[in-house]
Amino acid sequence: MNRYPLRVEARRDEPLSRWLWLVKWLLLIPHILILVVLWVGFLVLTVVAYLAVLITGRYPHAIQAYNVGVLRWSWRVNYYGYQALGTDRYPPFTLADVPDHPARLHLDEPARPRRWLPLVAWLFAIPHLVILGALTGAATWTVGRGDTTANAPISVVAAAVLVAGFALLFTGRYPRGLYDLLVGIARWNLRVIAYLALLTPYPPFRLDQGEREPGDGPDDPPDGPPVHRAAQDGSVAGPVIALLAGVVLLVPAMGAGVAGGGLLAFESARDSSGYVTGPALQVSTATAAVTTEDITVENADEWTRLLADVGGIRITADSATGRPVFVGIGRRADVDRWLAGSARDRITDVTGATVRYERAGGAVRSVPAPSAQDFWLGSANGATGAQMAWRVTDGDFTVVLANADGSPGVSADVRGAVQVPDLTGLGAGLLIGGIVAGILAVLLIVVGGTGLGRRHAGPPPPPPPAGTPPQPAPRTPVAAST
Image (tube, rainbow, N blue to C red):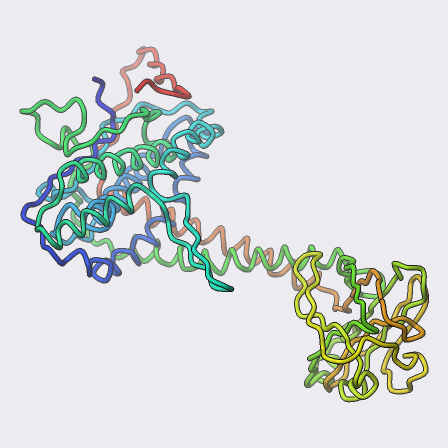
């Protein structure tokens, strides 16, 4: 059987604590926080490696060492934690290989990936991802009672770890079959991640269970010939600070970029009057009115005074029955007096094109014609294009949709619009600032990640002798035999 270049090894510690697995989640918090930073670096550096392979055909040696180190650290944490529960030895905080640790990972010298592989590696990995998703918890079980629901993952790994934990708790023994299965799933998962990072050739569709990799003889050392060696001497403060600063900067950079792009997209929807109009909603009721209540405005003068093109609200209604409709806004107390004793439907939620209502008590009957009332702050009526405009002021308000004659049975298509200032400058500034900050963050991550990678990398492979024809890279199959 051919040796796969990513060697994922494990040594089960015995005996294991009966109860420690109950609190490992707490003990692993420091590792989880560090791994969040390391995995952001892994993703960024993998993108850089993709570009390097596309352009030069070579995988940067320092990036390779860093990515393998992140996989190694993650494997030690997962082996101690809830992917295998294989050891009670607390994982070390290092990217380097630790020879006496029960969980080890290293990479034999990989073949050079083909230049086109970054374009399609994700596509070739889909069959593996589907299988691993089923094994590791892509499905969920939803339990609901009334308005309360809870989701629980359904996976082979979760079930096996839970059974293994209870077996340890009550018997002090870890079923060997469960252990071998969990290590096999973890090995498959790491192989697929390494392939997506272009570190290895296409992984086999094979669940290699147990502590040793296939191809290791009984007398072979469990770790094989590691390429990534012990860490070199020297301070890691510089690379660590650069990596951490890059990851911390990347979050606001992405936020600023997304916000800037969103504001520019929002700005493109403004009309010549500065209004942005929402989608049409079909509003209907068997009562005499539909209302939107609990509209409270405070300190409106301050922000409308600072921004001229802001503070306007526009509501347009088109009757669905051909009968003239009325749309208006008034102070809540005045509207309540007008509708006293009459039923109305209050809009409680709008999700997409779905409008939800709550019926207010009273009789379904006609009300005095709304256009005859003198308390409206803004109003309009008509069968089509009834458009109400209102300048925002402080107070508590209610928006009303009714038939113009006050009769029950209202149905109309309604569109709301809000006046906003010109957002071009703000959006462009945020977008440009996000891009600049993102580039700086990526540079810091590359400097920090490659700096850490060089400390854990062996010497790069020597170039072939002059005149030696290049060796073809192994073919990347879409599927491998089991």
